[in-house]
Amino acid sequence: MRGEATPRLREALEDDIVSGRLKPGQRLDEVGLAERFDVSRTPIREALIQLAASGMVEIRPRRGAFVALLGPRELIESFELMAEIEAACGRLAARRMTAEDRAAIEAAHADCAAAVRAGDRETYYSENARFHAAIYAATGNRVLAGEAQRHQRLLQPYRRLQLRVPRRMDASFAEHEAILAALLAGEGDVAAERLRAHVLVQGERFLNLIAALQDETEAVARAG
Image (cartoon, rainbow, N blue to C red):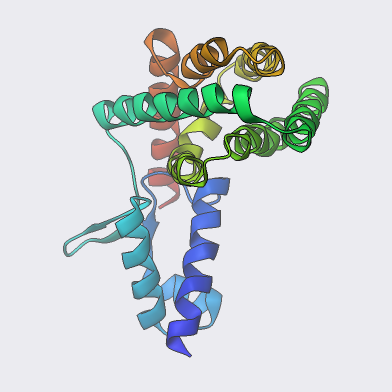
């Protein structure tokens, strides 16, 4: 029974982190989580260990488990890696995507557009992830797509925070339009470069992300 519970708990906690219900830097109380899921602390502890192995949770000796909080250097290096992975996906997708792949990418893009028109940041966040996932699938390379999905999930809390920066949602959508145009034209190198620039956080964008992250962690500290 315990072994069956652990994957379910891990997935639920992972979803909470990715969705922003659990914030970067937030402490994960085993007792409270056990009560919430109506289980003992043992499967909770096992789920946290698995999340720590994936990089989503940090376990600190004598202090407990916390939602992973990347430092500035780790954060920018992680986005640099994600940018290169996305660029590779864009290059392959432009060459290999099928009619079905094209329809999936265009449908996600249309739903992003609707979210922008509505000013709905939460919906844009989820449709943005769907847009990128459709590009990964269009590569025809399951290993690369799997790595892209894994790294995307690790950075999702930070990508969500970026959307809180004024006008970032509009800028992100404009970047999507340019990426889509390159993909549909079969211009792999152009798509790669546009995806790389879209994901990278540099200069003002990086400073804005750090400021949003500091605001978030201060709010967590006050709530705790």
